[in-house]
Amino acid sequence: TEWLRWLGTHCGEGKVHVFRPEPEGTGWAGFGQSQQVPLKQLTDQLLKEGKADKADASSFVYGFDFRTRCDCADLLDEVQILPHFLADRLGTDPALPRTNWPALLVGPPGSTSALHVDAKFLPFWLSLYSGRKTFRVVTLDDWREHLAGPGSLFAHDGTVQRPVDAFDDAEVERELLARGATVYNISLQPGDTLYLPVGALHGAFNAVGAGPAVALTANFLDADHGPVVDEEYCEEVPNAAQTDAVCNLLARDPTLRSGQVRLPPRPGKPQPFWQWHLSDAVRGGFCAKYGAREARCAGAAQRCEAAAEGDGMISAFRSAFAAQQTAPST
Image (cartoon, rainbow, N blue to C red; front, side, top):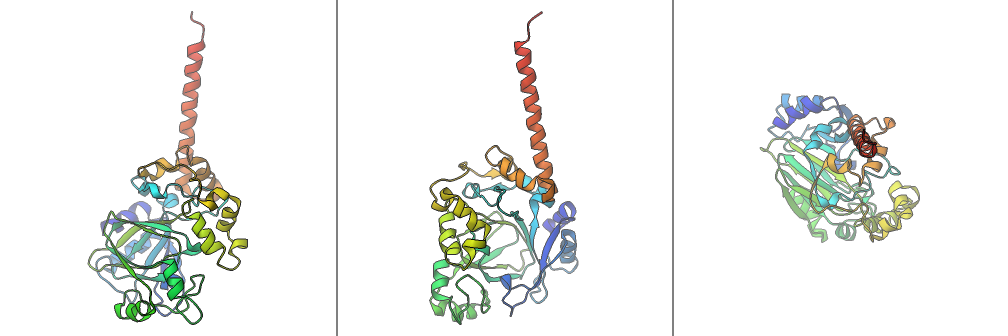
């Protein structure tokens, strides 16, 4: 509950997408349509209804896609991005659409997301800060071989054709294991970070008795994963190569598509979010994308403006120092 109160107090004005479960539907992750509400409305509702500490699977609300870099920049001051994810192009290439990543997720105990594949088959990371979270995962090759096809559970492009409750063990045995799929079970504690590879089928369960699950997550694309996204999504999914911005980027950038070069070079240790995104390595693209007025991203705009002013002060100091050194003595 401490996380809910902190988020409501410090970031409550920003909008979060709130979903309700639709177990028999085929919508994204087993949810119906979302609505946007202030984050504080969600956190207050969870605290008021007692759903911060107990399960209510029949009526839970689940918060996704809160724009931390825009509406809760202070939260990212202490967030460390692991070196594996620092070469991401989605968040720093102005040619690509703006995203909400890293996005804040808030899930009450007992809430779930159904088996699904992320958009464009992009890999993602998730860092858990509160609660306990369990993922069930089927790899891309495995679900396409055993769970996809006409009349099966999923289409070749990952579209859900018939929902499966990944946390009903009897249903998992009948619908997944009996078809030959391997299901991985991953448990996360606060401080853990999960990496999921390209096109992996996954669902999550937020444990009962552990308080709300609060996490940051982001899809990403770098030269290590570009070739797989190109092969498995752009070349396999109808019309993706012609219409998708990520596929267009892969077509234009042979280094990203071939996996030959990592751009930009990655440090060997975790980097604080703002320190990395305002560094010389990526600041130009990041600030052009999120610092511009039309991006309507107040947090990033303020940080980018402060960094630019800092550069101006340093330049002025250096110029004054150089002039002092060359001035004639009297």
